[in-house]
Image (tube, rainbow, N blue to C red):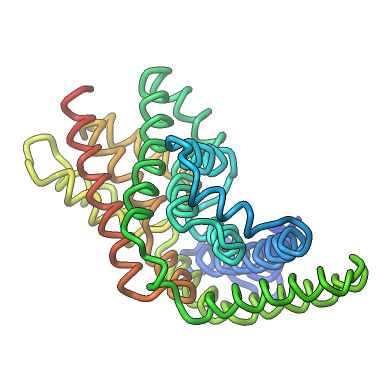
Length: 322
């Protein structure tokens, strides 16, 4: 339904050619912008309800004071793996977790894994590359989220969250305390929850438009011959270069699998191809633009730099093992 509406806007209302590059880019822009804004509003409202009734401070204290032996990162990564979101679509949930005060390392574990692994891509991998490579893809994606979340969590990066999201946390906590003291009913709390959710949508609207516009501009443009030239087996720098080339791209895991199949069929090592895929779906310029509303540039740089390094290491490891 949402895709049909986006198609109508691009091809019906604006009269663009569905086969043209500009038509595809505009259609992509409409679809992703509407989808992300709806997700952001719905998830913000749900987190508002949870914050209003669930003792989020107790959960936060539990996660930060108890030794769970990494299980919190595993469950966050597992939740990311079963949610069918791209890197930009994962950000509304990330904002909701941060708003609720969930430890930053745990939220990063979700943010890293969510775009990398989803059920559609798993099914495509299974049919294309077989069980062994599929297991490598799934396990490595989840491990990347768990390890990345743990490392980033140990860095104590909370001071580098933006002032905007910290203000949201303060207002949410203060509002919840007032409601508890005055025993406000759900009906009485709902207008405030929806108002706060709409405020979050308005706060990130410009960043969503800019981010998705960047994604739309490069959507569908994958110069395979150029990539294959630099991702060849003889190049020692193929893995880091493939990761750097993948970052400006923007696609979900399912849409990039056929391209990876072409690369592997033409001689690109599987580790190099997987590293490229992880960079495309897990790190992107539109994602960085959206994250700017939540994080400072320094935190975005640390996040991107850490995950880039881990993906490069995985690429070399896969080329050696596979």
